[in-house]
Image (tube, rainbow, N blue to C red):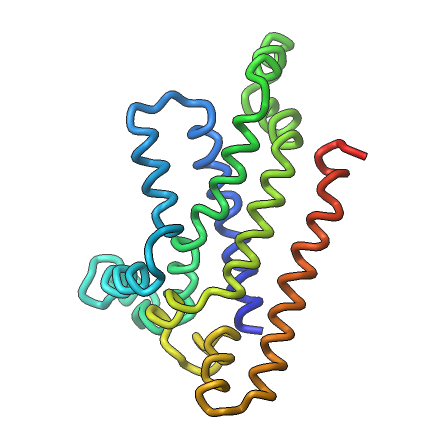
Length: 215
């Protein structure tokens, strides 16, 4: 349940944020666009322990972010669900941004221009034309983010530790059961994680032709 909670909150926060990031990257000629895209893609190539270490340092009580959170909520970010959620937003960023960016890049620019010439505002053009056409990319981003959050181990362990009912996700619980030679419990939890991941991907791939307009 903790893993599901983390995955759902990550999707709720990250997908709208990724729309705000991906759309300008797709259509705006930014001077340092390549560097921005490289920074977003960095979690794909960094070892989870390296990314987890830097996040652990960044969220510590002696940092500005950690001190602000401590002052507002009365506790630190490290080894808490909130810190785990913050880390999840970072390590899932490329899984959310890249599919949405590619979907926006595939939309012909003349469709936007025709909408503007018809008197539609920028927001209405986005809501009525761009977003429906980019929906397959949004759904792909949602699926990848959800599935990746459910299975992440290294970053979660570094930032959240292994606290029952607070930061012990299903991936960490499986590792614990294997270390304790409890293969039955590890097998059951692994089957649950496999089933959730397969079901999520299966629903999306079966429905993708309908979302993209293909029969």
